Amino acid sequence: MTGKRYMSLDLGDVRIGVAVSDTMGIVAGALETYRRRGDDSDFKHVADLIQAQNAGVVVIGLPLNMDGTKGPRALMAEEWGAKLAALTDAKVVYQDERLTTVTSERVLIESGMRREKRKNVIDRVAAAVILQTYLDNPLKLPL
Image (spheres, rainbow, N blue to C red):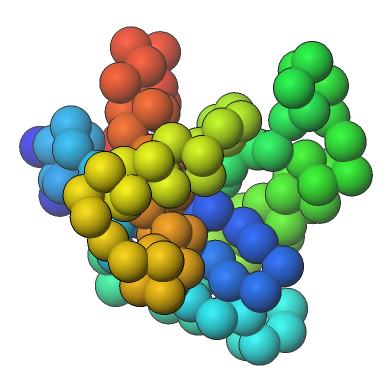
């Protein structure tokens, strides 16, 4: 056991959802929803989180088109990930995030959460769904 964790990011225009794994890399948990302030502040905040959470791998949600192709949002996520990789020692990987927001919304509705509260947590729950999907993949990068 290395003590390292996996971290995931659900990149949005306004917010970034963040989730982390346990140190064994088995279970994902929602960590926070960060309100974006501009690239410099955003990269600094995420880099600080990577260090604070001892993350060795950062999983970025890749918003592929429904047919599996990469559109402008997926290319933006890859560009963002490349910049983040240059700023930190963590490995950056990507996970298909199609329908994760829909799944997250459904889970929150079924739990009885009110709409106003859902909008404050949806991004971090989506990040947890992205991370859990990655963690469940037997081909994931080891820490």
